[in-house]
Amino acid sequence: MVHAYILVQTEVGKAADVAVQIGQITGVTQADDVTGPYDVIVRAEADNVDDLGKLVVAQIQGVAGITRTLTCPIVHI
Image (cartoon, rainbow, N blue to C red):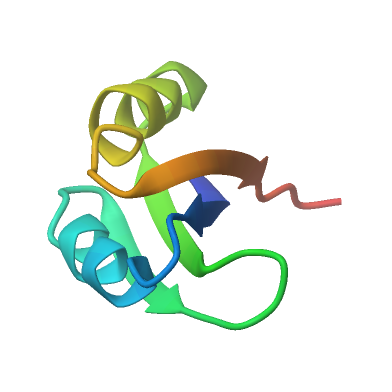
């Protein structure tokens, strides 16, 4: 299982709506609107890195109001 944080920038005034929509996607375990350089922080999980990429590109980035994402896979050192 691969886990990641996905940092999301949105259009002005869209953070709350984007967080709600992302939170309903299968594989997303948490989606919160936050303050700072990013508007929403998402925690997601997938079976492997390829599936994580598909989740981000095909589903999360497809949510209306998103302008940019940054995916940060969790590593265990």
